[in-house]
Image (cartoon, rainbow, N blue to C red):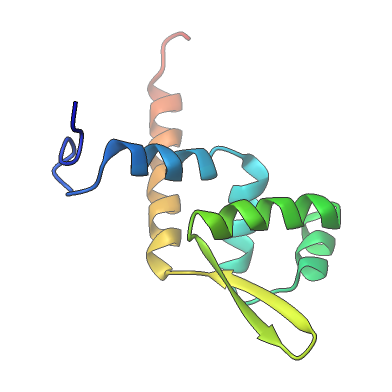
Length: 108
């Protein structure tokens, strides 16, 4: 079965699921919001978010694979930033929806 246009966006549901998996970790969301304020190194992200450098590196690898962050090399240093400003808009929209759904719930 072809799901190429199920959401009317010309994108497959598999692509959407891939992106959703990349966003399904709270630390990844924290990292995205943080690098949305400007380019940062792994060390800066780890220190500012209170996470280990290996954990941050792992999450950045996944976010880069999902095309949500990009990389800029500055001499020997690598800095990560949000790939597109729309990523932050989508995160804010999803956050708003999540708060509304949770506020409206009557049971789980």
